[in-house]
Amino acid sequence: MFERFTRDARRAVVRAQEAAGRIGAELVEPEHLLLGLAEGCGPASRAIAEAGLDAGSIAATIEADLVAMLEVVGVSPSVLEAAPPRPRADLPRLSLHAKSVLEHALREAVRSGDRRLGSEHVLLGALRPPGPTLARVLARHDVEPERLAALVQVEVAAGRR
Image (cartoon, rainbow, N blue to C red; front, top):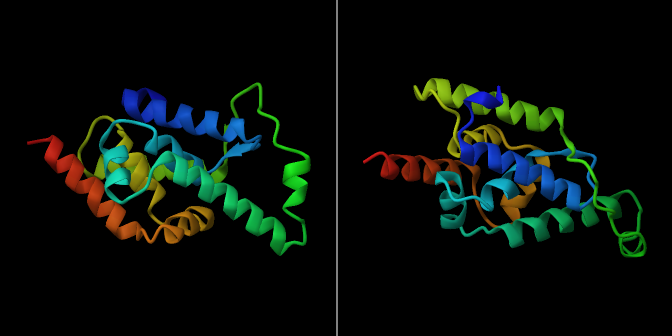
């Protein structure tokens, strides 16, 4: 499937794997894909920036969400400080949710008549519908998934003129 990806889309997936690996995650999740897209230079990264997001704020929000989820199950945030995540030596695999994002991205590319799957398709795939953590990341920044989808469509249209 990756042979149909543009260079920017492939790099976004690799950046997502690297980001997940840095924090010691076992799997790449949709929120890591958003982070990988934000670090890029294609239409998806431009739309993400236009929505007021950047890689640093996304990463901080992912971490804050993890801390909040741990607190819900009774784990103190001090546990994270006492045992900081160990970066992985290998790149983490894609979770079922991340694979689903890429399947949706492929559908978006086919629907729009594109022969290649670009970063814009990956972003649209992540937003239809966003997973729970990704939805919380966007909500914490007051970004509606529909607005972000519209922004990426504008970026694509602007690039094709």
